[in-house]
Length: 116
Image 1: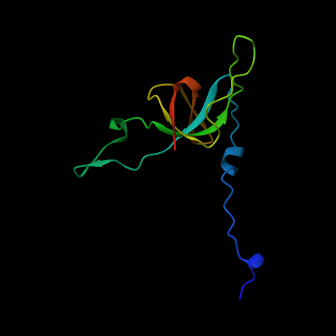
Image 2 (image 1 turned 45 degrees about the horizontal axis):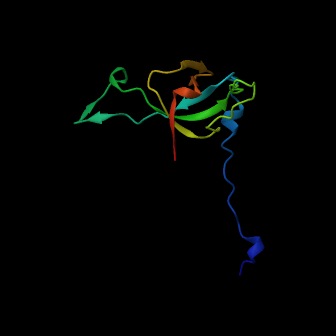
Image 3 (image 1 turned 45 degrees about the vertical axis):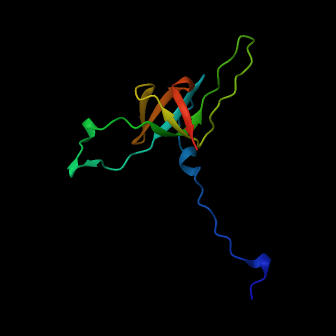
């Protein structure tokens, strides 16, 4: 018989270790995101090449900038937080590559919504 206080509780792996290695700190109302790679698209038995695929619109928020300021100089809080899954405008932002990983810097206005 196992006593209630002695039950084994599995530890969740630390998901923030990858985020801690990022050396990019966005400024202003910019947000650093990483696109979620879609699986290989196959339609009717034909593999769609990368050049013909739609740009992924779903991304994970990696880091937030310093935020924008209103007319009074007060910081306006972000509507997203690190770890949120978001939908992006397909052609907004700037792509950056760090240590072989692709990221995108977008303005908060380029974020269309949060996926729940």
